[in-house]
Length: 231
Image (cartoon, rainbow, N blue to C red; front, top):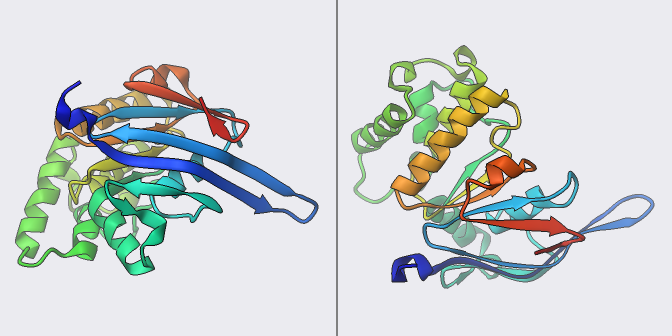
């Protein structure tokens, strides 16, 4: 492995998370630790309810753990202010969810541009953002759908738009939570092929949550989440 690939992009140490229910408290994560290197693809597998999505949300700065910490390079994600954590998430992390979360009132191009509009680098023009979004749509095979609304697209097309949006800010890390869960196998395979192709060719690290062993085997490593810990 090269020196660049050995650079630890994200480190999770001793993550704990529990949810209080009316009759009991459910301990979902019980000391999870993991590391992901720059450019690495990692699958997280486990039974339904094992806490895979919870872990992904914590890694991405969306859900504060009860204990432990997440280091994104040198930044302690949950030691930052909410504003700075949002900034790190916007600049360094892209998300792909099972549900596409596209805004129906915006067209496809506008949906892809959203992360860049939220970040708005100093000196970056709307024309530059539009150009980058169109390049991503071209890579996703959807350049001819840029002016359509999400509701005019198939499920597979919507997920490809969501993938383009996740890469809009050129993140170091892409977090994908069951990205083919709402798709048939053939369509899902095409989306996964695009996901792996784009992340690897552009040097993004990828953490992919899945229950599918076949999908997990396409990653560099597989982590198994069970009993609140990974192995």
